Image 1 (cartoon, helix red, strand yellow):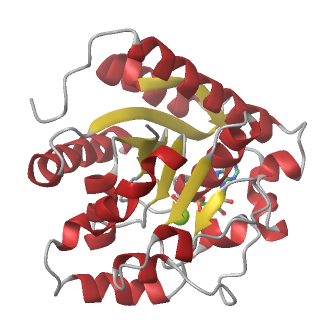
Image 2 (tube, rainbow, N blue to C red):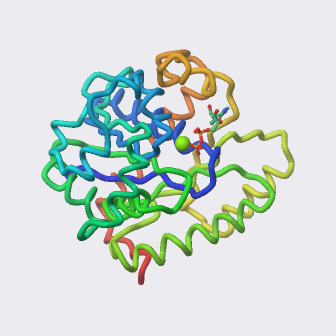
Length: 267
Ligand code: ADP
Ligand code: MG
């Protein structure tokens, strides 16, 4: 059965969308079947996948509010070789409409249920806030991948985020796990970044990915060409880092499947 991973951090600009698009493309390049769900009304993951958010016939709105089946809303042609549920400003309306419906936090989970065997990985790009869309992502996911920048106060923010995820998990998804913490926009010459990185490893141990995403201009340029970085500049450090991250996720999944299940967040 496919694994559903929510990419979340309530802070904006930490690399959620960049990670969603490039990890999805890297996984698809390893011949895995991948679905990317854009839940951010800004639609950056949609545009970054080479799909015009202004022209797309359906978005996460139809999936969540109208309860249309996934195969009727999914875009199968993307520049990254994965399937996409798009987002645009309509998804803001979905957030509002969901407030009035029954079992509103389980809409995404229910929408994905019949399709989980069709994909090896489902990545969800969350908005930079803790709204009903993010709650839907947490309820639908097996685990949360948290991208973060190694800045001053980053640890405080992360501890708060972990608490929030834990509280949410207790209400909507008792099996939710932390997939991993990803250091993004990393500059090894920056002493503060190194210090924060060390503290991170002390606090969160093996939850911190060994793979580090460097600050790389190609990663920032690629979305304006509607392309994941690996198809924009495959020799860039950004492209190599996200391929390495996909490899690390796959190796972790392999080693976990031969172990006892790890304890969940709510224990
Ligand atoms: P979020 O989705 O968390 O708001 P984004 O992925 O959109 O964050 O990243 C915020 C900005 O930083 C974007 O302009 C993006 O292109 C840029 N960016 C993200 N990761 C990197 C990186 N590793 N190196 C350089 N620029 C990056
Ligand atoms: Mg984003």
